Image 1 (cartoon, rainbow, N blue to C red):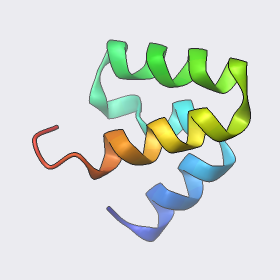
Image 2 (spheres, helix red, strand yellow; image 1 turned 90 degrees about the vertical axis):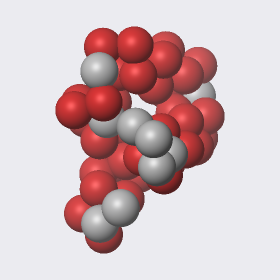
Image 3 (cartoon, helix red, strand yellow; image 1 turned 180 degrees about the vertical axis):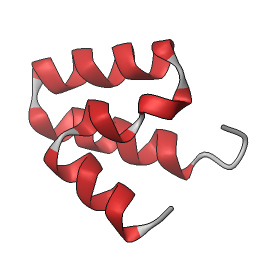
Length: 52
């Protein structure tokens, strides 16, 4: 996980997970709509997943 990905996930979480698939984008987008912090946490968790 690069510095730029972390920065992008803090600024705009759905953009940080664009290459992870439609489901990940949708989950992060919905969580970001509920609140900015849940979206950031979800994006960081998805980006930190070694299997993804």
